[in-house]
Amino acid sequence: MKVKEIRGLSPEDLTKQLNEAHQQLFDLRLRLETKQLVNHREIPRVKRDIARLKTVIRERELGIR
Image (cartoon, rainbow, N blue to C red; front, side, top):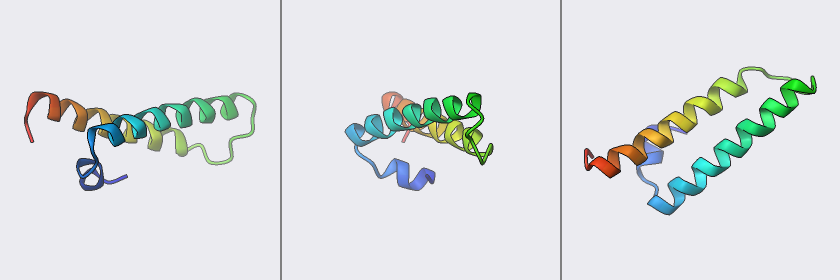
């Protein structure tokens, strides 16, 4: 997800997206441990998405943007 797309979301949607990203990361880690993960680059991508979501949430808390 792009930062512009994330900034366009409502606070409820941000929370929902963050929960989904955490669930996706959990699933990817589980598949990695059971040797079923095909594309290992998915894990860092999801981690970056989580970081972007948390950054936008924190910006809104502080009133930066």
